[in-house]
Structure formats: structure tokens, C-alpha cells
Image (tube, rainbow, N blue to C red; front, side):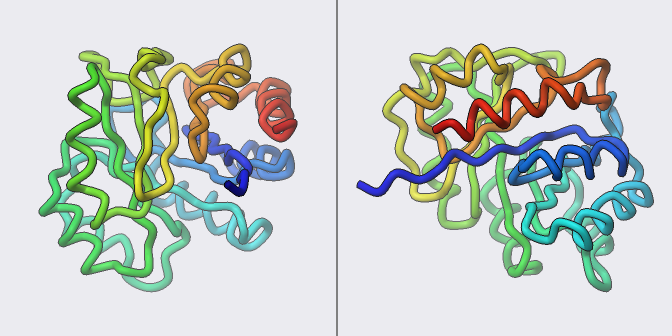
Length: 218
């Protein structure tokens, strides 16, 4: 079987300067949080500026807008004209019907769905979604937050997984865990946020560079 490289997404970016620095390091995707209660929240205006800069300078990097339980109409309103993001990541409790309707209305935008994994049974709920989304993101379950907690999914739930769509692992992905992830879990991509931060939304560029370099070794 052909081996493919593991992709890297750095999520929770809050400034143009850091977005450009991280793009220069060779990341494959950059995520911005559009969830009000998140400490990494970025306003629509600022998000547009960051993504527009990335689109102009690094058009091959995926620009991922992370949203949670928003109405479909409010999402569509934000896509009037030419959008600067090319992927929407649903990070709430959106059901299959929601995903199907959103995909029908903006078919040219990639649609990723995050699933919070508390136990093995949670993985069984993903299969019915696969026809209506373009990517799967597995995150750790946390009663306090829907992402960015730094907590890992139990590794025994992650081995020998197989989906019909590309899948990413999130939740506590650090440089120390990368080697194990790439050898034994083998996702299509890894999503990194809190482990490379100085504070919420402010990345340590040196740490980002180290983890991207680690992944590229494979």
C-alpha cells in the first residue's frame, strides 16, 4: 500500500503575523476559532483578514474555520461573496441532517466534522456521517470544553481505525506523542493547538517548528 505523508494542522491562530510564520514553517492547514466562548476566539473581521493574507501568500494551505452549533443560515450569510476559508470544521453537536443540508448549500467548501471520543462506542457513531462530510477529526471528550483542552483520547481507542474519509487526531497532540501517533495510530493528519502555546491563541513558534519537523521525518 502506498504510504502517504501525515498532514499537520495548527489550530487556534489569532494573528496575521503568527499565521504567516507558521505557514512558512510548512504546515498544511491553519485553523481559526469562531466560537465565542473559546479563549482563542477571533472576530469575523479579523478572521477574514488572516485568511485573506494566507490565501494570497500561501494558497495551498487549507484555511479552516472552526464553528460550533451555528445556524446554517448564519454560516451561509458569512459566505456571501468570495469566502477566504476553504474548509468549515464543525466542532459541536451537529447531526447528520445538519451536515447534509450544509453540504448541499455550500458544496464547494470542504466540510470536516469533529467527534469527541469518550469511549469506544463513540467511534461507532461516525460511520453514518461519512457520506456527508469530507474529513473526520477525533478529539478528546471533556465536560468543560469542546476543544483545546490538551487532553488526549485513550490510545487504545485509536489503533486500527479505518474510515472512508481522511481523519485527523486532536486533543493533547504534543511533540512527545508524535512518534507514537505516526508509528502506531497512523492518522491522515494531526491537529495541534495548546501543546505549542505560550498562552491561549499565542503560539510558541519554536515549538511549532519542532513538531512540524518531527512529523516531516516520516
